[in-house]
Length: 232
Image 1 (cartoon, rainbow, N blue to C red):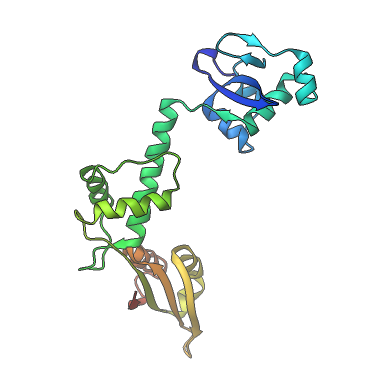
Image 2: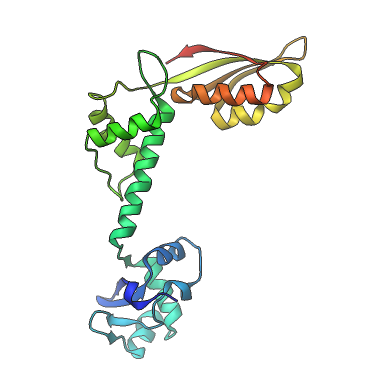
């Protein structure tokens, strides 16, 4: 059970009547998504009319509006359907998580147009700082990437590219590369050559080219022949 001093309020209105429970922010959100136990999320097994004032909701009202007096059942509905306050620390962690996702998306998909190579992670992170890009903990990551690119491009030349990679895989390793192809992109073409080698064309995000080559070389012990067929 959560410490009351660290708890935040989760609230739900039913028939214009407010109901509140004291919860651990992170555990309550986890419970809402189907993980964990309701008892772990609660600071106290009580339903409040006003948690701040310590006013508990009457059993009569709970029975009337929730069809049960069981505080665990009522609390479960409040957490799943109501509003959960987020702590400043939790919001900060969400922003940091989304910032990392944004940097990763740009690193995986974006390249320097003059070299067609991805910008290193550290260079992108420094550019985020220089451009003073703010991250919204609630807004969709991909929408925020679009906004971020507008601020980043005056500092770093970035172009999102897709590359088609032509691969000749020797017979001894041909059966081992399917997982690599699937992990990095989409196989557009696959033919078996007369000598048992695999000829494939794989579509990948532009920034993944170095990592793709590295993984293919690891699986094929440097004996694969891969080259860029098309950039768009």
